[in-house]
Length: 154
Image (cartoon, rainbow, N blue to C red; front, top):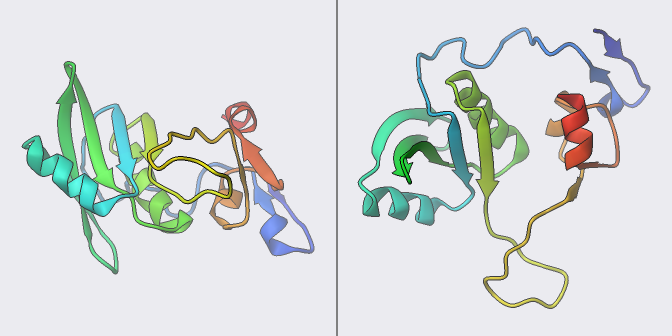
């Protein structure tokens, strides 16, 4: 494992998966194997209230405290939390979920579109343009990332 240097710093990649400070170094959370991160504050809170979800942890950021709830769906425990906007902030919470035991995480949110669609249409992204900077910490540089590229890295 080594650092692949590049004259453009954002294009550098360190293939070592151990960071100086690893997620979970100061928590004793134990989360379910499955988790959902919702990029929708109001809906996250409404779901937790309507389903009497138990708070099983929380993440404190500079802007707010993000509670992590536990729900049971068809006999399976699932952690549910609001995801903050921005790649770095969302990854901060995702890394702590993983450090606490979550292994299968799905993120859901809402978005605008550049095509004609109907309100409420459901989209499943198959690739994403990389321009936020956070993903370069986890995967080698590329213009975009798709599911297959990510699975190959694991």
